[in-house]
Length: 121
Image 1 (cartoon, rainbow, N blue to C red):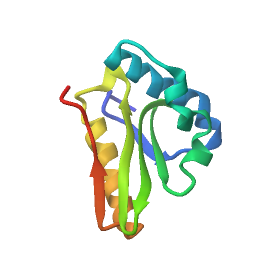
Image 2: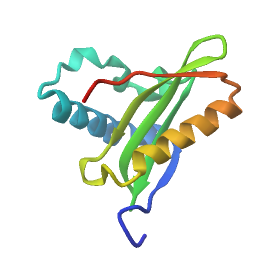
Image 3: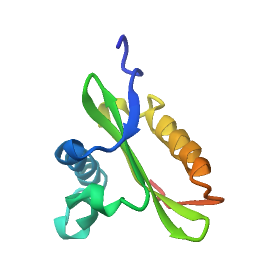
């Protein structure tokens, strides 16, 4: 791996639990300034919470540096969730790469519609 844009995206594995949860929650604290741990129960057991969908992690030099998930919502529809990128890699294209991978996999899973909600910031 020669530069900061070199990463590998793959499905979440149970051994990723602690590092993945920490990355997502750190991003939330950075964005919102506070964190209520009771508001994110899906992150306590990612494998179970996203068993019906897909949760991806991006790795760089063996460290999890990005996440993104798909969760079915209705027939043919899934929601993109838990998009998170380590602060040091923002604006590097990693978020776009994760989003492209989610969209590609959604097509293969036969979803016709994807929902992505965001904030103005």
